[in-house]
Image (cartoon, rainbow, N blue to C red; front, side, top):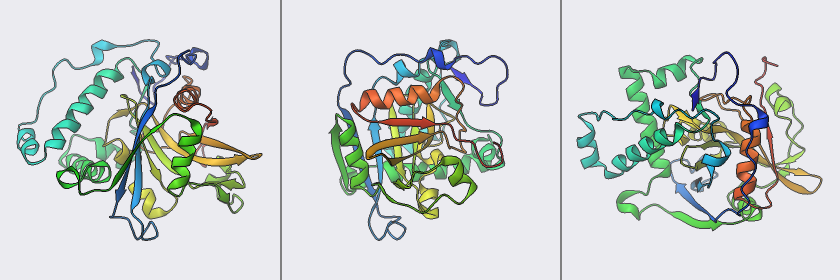
Amino acid sequence: MTDSNTASGTPTGTPTDVPRPPNDPSPPVRTKTYFNHLLTVANKLAPYPVHKCHLHNVQHFFASPHPDPESTPKHVRENPFDRIVYCINPSAKKAQERARLRTVLGASLLTQKYNDKPANIRMLFSKTPQGAAARATTRAIHRKMYGKGFFGFLKKKEKTWIESGDQFVSLIEKFGGGIMDREPNTTDKEKNKNYAPRSGPEYTYTLLQDGTLHFSRAESPLLDVASKHCIHSSVAEEVVYSGTFRLEDHDGEKVLVMDNDSGTYAPRTDRGELQRLEGLLQWNFKGLKVEARKFVPPGLE
């Protein structure tokens, strides 16, 4: 079920509604890493990696207490120009079909609608020529970042199956996300996030209705532009959740610290979303230590 981020009234779910993990263990999680050459300068002359995991049981952990199948459009109107686009780029049709599937799945899930407060986000999702152009550009960037390349073989990528938290942590460490010593927190945002003295670089992530988890490093201004949540989601109006994460050293133990820091979607936390997120990741990656925190932007404490 979709609820506006700014909706008033009684919440449709509370932390006490958080589902218990299934008794059966999670199947292995299919993971792909794509290497992009557009940002080699920003990534120390190395291809910039972006990651995609297909998590299981999102429908269980983020089930809505009040599913609304009637909110799903029965017939999706196809743009007359879509057929031309599909002929030029067949992968665009597959992307559109995935987007429609996520819309259907989202009717029974707790989801997050885009944040309509910032003017730039309103413009991006607006039904105007400027909005359409911005969405087309952003989706093209998404296809470039997560696409197969020409003919499906010219772009380097790695595929693997992950079965444990240690393997997921190793994936992050392998591509520059390992824990290191860092300077004390000085900015208001750093203080609000409360980075540990030993922590890894920050990643942005977006979780979609079919279980797709996109994430990439965002520790520099240029990489931050390439890892925007709207790029991860291919400008989806709704997602299951989004924010940032990083590895931290807690008394010698590696912990995945996650939050809801996303200007594009400003995810809610009043329906137990953070607890649901912890449960989902810990069930999919057995043994993974996860700590999900609520992020409060500076000035809104």
